[in-house]
Length: 349
Image (cartoon, rainbow, N blue to C red; front, side, top):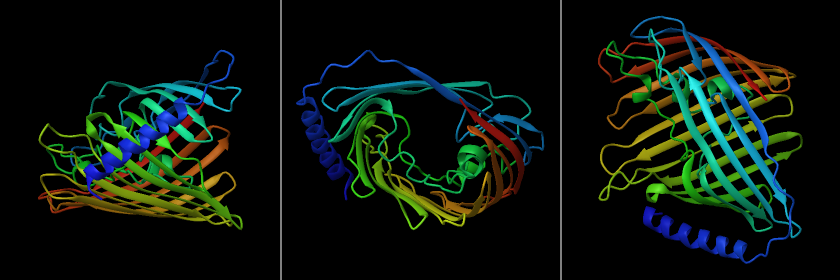
C-alpha cells in the first residue's frame, strides 16, 4: 500500500472516530487525582571494543530512568478520560555512550504529554505519546527483554567497531515503530484478542499496526505487525517507508520463542533490514535466554550479535540481570569485534 494511500485512509479513519467520540455527551465525574510512578534503571558494563576496555556505568538505554504522573476518571456514561505526563532523566545513556572515558552528561526527555478518551468505541489519544506502531518489534515474553530486547542498538549500539569511534549501530538497527510522537492516534476495541491502531504524526508521518494477544491451553502468544512512513525529511523528500513485526510464544512449561524483523526503505539510498531470534526458559523468578541477530545497512554492511542473558525477579518491581554478548561487523574495513559483559537492575516504583 502506498504511503499517500495510507495517509488518506488514516485521515478519514481518525476523523470519523474523533467525531463519533465528540458526539457522546460526557457525564459528570469527580476531579482527577494524579498517581506518581516510575523507575530507576542502571547497569555496569565491562566492554572490549575498538577504543578501549574502560568500565562503563550507564543508564539502561532500552528502558531508562524516568518518572510519570497518570490519572483517569470514568464518567457516568461509560467514557474514561485520562492523561499521562512523563519525564525521562538519564545519566550516561547506554544508547549513545559506548567505550569512552568520560560521561556523556545528563539526558532529560519530555516523553509524554498525552491525553486520551476511551469507551466502547475504542480509544483516541492526542498530544505527545506512542505512535500506533511503537513497540511493534518488541513483543517479548522471555523475561529477559531489559538486556536483550530486539532493538539491540538501544543498549549496545554505542560501542565502537573502529578506532575512530564508529558505532555498531551504524551496521545494525532494528527499526521499531515511531516512538513518542506528537500525534493523533486511534485504537480499536479488542476483537478476539486483535486490535488495530493508526496515527497521524508530526511531519506527515503515518502509522498502522495490528496486534494480537491471547492464551490457549496454558500457552501464551503475542504478535504485532506494522507499516509506517517516517516524518518527511524535507518539503520535497518523504520519510522512509518502514515495516516490521514481532511474535513471542510462551509455553506452559516455561520454554519460549521470540522473533522480530524490520525493514526501512528511504527515498534515497539503499534499504536496511534486521532480524532477531531468541530462545528462552522461565521458571519461578528466573529467566534465561540465548539470542541471535543480524542486520544490514543501506550500504550493504552487516552487523550481527550473539548474547546470553539471565534475569531474576526477587521482589515485585525489582529485576536484576547478567549478560554476555558479542557484536560483530562485516563489510566495514578494519572493524573489530566487540565483547561485552554487563550486570544491571531496574526497580519500578
